[in-house]
Length: 340
Image 1 (cartoon, rainbow, N blue to C red):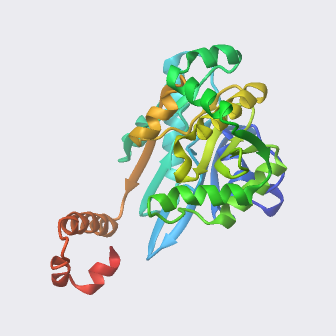
Image 2 (cartoon, rainbow, N blue to C red):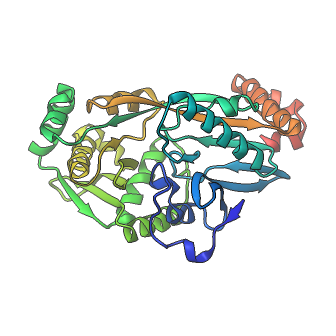
């Protein structure tokens, strides 16, 4: 396991990545001082690179991912030759990777969609959940992309334009964060990451020419929606969004996303909506004519004590879900209630 030196943090981009989420500068922005990586080489030839975050909480060790990061997982050097030979090498490299993981109680990562073989992890006791994203995998013809959208999506974009909504390409991270926070307030949820984290990531992306912020404004000058996209030469990612819940029907969000797709067509190869397993969001993304793509969520819990705590927490939450008066909680010891 190699802890990255300070000189590596802003040394620019490296080629041994599946996406910009594996770049050292990205990892240092979202997990400063907490990320590590495992490298497997043959001589000077790098064959595998695996970045991860190591966290210690309540006596447990977690190998996990940083916030605001869609995927990590291993990068494998592209191989030629027979498919069977490629699978054999993948098995060899991934088995060595698993053996070199630090001692841990819990492992959790979302692998990049280019990693389609997780069998070596299965054989070592890991489990997998299939997740989905939506991708426009060919940005070469913007007119074809427009024609491939659902009619109602094109109508939303036209409606927003006719109503006088303007999309502004900006560096105004504070207005974006205000709009982003409104989305969670509407659901009575706290922001799941700190504003300082987003500010730090925004600065790192700006230094590496890897982000766009779009704010939509109505005819009255009021900000309606915000969209933060990040990109490299491989893909643009729809990273974070936000909006005024009282203006959700204006079509501003669709218009901002269309502007980001048009920009992406000039600088990168694909557009990744960063998917969603939430049904209304999935339907919205699908409306842009994007193709469904699956990727793997890999996990393992090796600690029986941690397994018990998780099981106990889930069980009690299910019990409390039907306990509208709170009577049941009086029979649960306080130390257990505080652990939920």
